[in-house]
Length: 173
Image: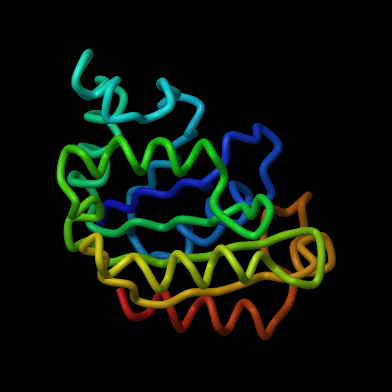
């Protein structure tokens, strides 16, 4: 199985990238590719820009990466209760290629934050909207208080209850 994983943020020190990188390793015998959204930076989407210049190559590449995967893991950073601008822009451009951005791929959706909310607002939005974009969501997990529940040095969850929940989601793939 080929797993594509990424944090829906442009932060280079992303706790969501740490979480999603760990989660993808739980898929037995999988080949995992972790994307960095900074590699897909492009102009802010607008219909005028699309009409003038077409769809950027970076959007095409991102869309293709999803298409090549068997499963997609995404961990959402939350900015002011919603998606990060970096993720939203890439998603908007990719949706212009095909509204079915997730191409019927099995998906695991996650989110974390340093605080007790665990980025539940953005995760709820993602889980609710993903099926409209052809996602087969196998499960979702919010990890509150990241630094209390994740061992940064070992690169893994340390909260047994969260580990069990994540393993149950991964088992659905």
